[in-house]
Amino acid sequence: MSFHGFDTAQIRSMAAHMKSVGPSARTLHGKVAGLLLEVQGLMDGKPATTSPRLEPLLGQVFPLFYSGLPASLQPELDDTSASMDRRCKQLDAVQTLEKQGYTVDPSLYFDDEPPPDEQKIKDALKYFDDHIGDSGGFLWSDSAQGGKEVLDDFAKLSPAELDAVMSRMSDSQLKKLNGQLGEGSSWWGAGDSDGAVKARWENMLQKECGPTTLARIEPALSNLKWQPDTTVDGAHYQAVDDPLFGPNGPDLMNDLRQGQDGDCWFLSSLAAITERDPNWPQEHIKQNANGTYTVTFYQKGPLPGMPPTPVEVTVDNKLPVDSNGHPVYADTRSGATWVAIYEKAFAQYSGGYKKIEGGWGDVGMSDLTGQPATRHSPGDVSFADISTRIGKGEAVTIGTKGDGDVHDDRLVSGHEYSVERVDMNAHPPTITLLNPWGSGQYEGTRQMPQEVTLTEDQYRKNLNEVSFTPSGV
Image 1 (tube, one colour):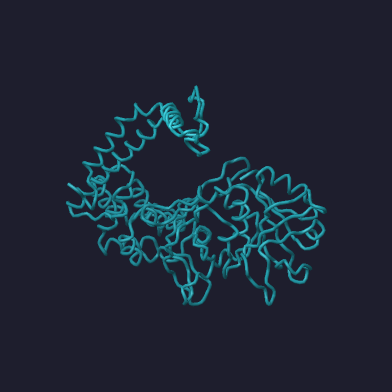
Image 2 (cartoon, helix red, strand yellow):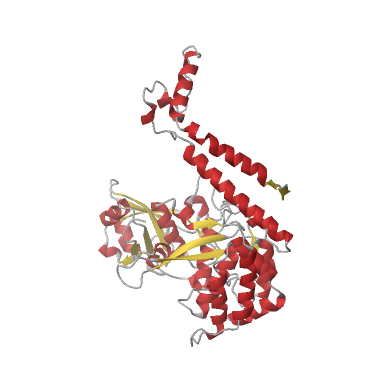
């Protein structure tokens, strides 16, 4: 019996077969080595393989010591088999729910989650009716306290269960929830504040509900800030379906292109971190099953020595565009959206795009990594110091002086750059900066270079500050 194209009986049969053949897949190295030797004898002196990963196996007496390919496929087969079985349980439970009249968005059908429980859905809806009007007596959060109690209860649900609950809510129930959350913009506040409660609601719903459910509840829950406020007249949100990354991952030379927001300090902070750790963006942006993105920022520990607290911010794939459909902020013309998604999530986290206009590299790097980044005068930091820090994996940003104090036509005044590299072997030594504007951008009639290489004398004359993460990213 198939359900939306999935035949769980056949999928389970395949999973069981994968698990059964796992024990016989323990000697992969030996079998491949033997096959290559057999082929070698039939090739009249021609190589059996030109693959750099397979060539070392030729003539191996003890292929056990070869490390180019896994020696055994059993762990992978067992893990994949178990995952398929869990997903089948999820799919069967969703089918049962839909027969009972519940709606679960198709994007959540095949989640690797515990199967949805109809009783939990009923209990959550009853809890909503019983507690949405509660007030916990907190002077600073009376207006949101009932919303917080329901939030804490709903947070225990799986995505499929939450989607079923929210799709089942009547217009009257949604109106009660919206009223309890109160008016005004949300922000990532602390503890039980109104802002923190609303931010958690936005995050949870955008991360876990399906597109159909979100399309219904977003207009009804108008007291939640679903999109960060823009600063450009006429800008509107439009879905952008390009992938997060290009085929080779983050590519700063092509993907980084600042738009009509003065957030060079944030984009350069992101670039500086990516320079030192190209895997950082992939590790801190997660694409969810419903097509939204969750970006992880960090808040510094409240006391020295305490670890930073990760803060997840979920946004959809809609970006602010002008009347021609062109992004007004971080550009996506390279075909990759990770910079724009990171910027949008930070605007949501901060309270709107206007809130991220103007800042410092150390602040941006601290928000991105949780480390207490530091800011210094260029007069106190030599190229040798910067080179040593880069060698340790530290991210570095640099800011130019204000109008009238920059005496190099290649530099934008009052602007933040990321540091790509320091060449201590050049004569004299040089530092190379990356402009977050990207390539082909103009200041007045001057086309500004994407990369700028300075001597130490030029660095001290034109720059206002240099910032570091205190340890490798």
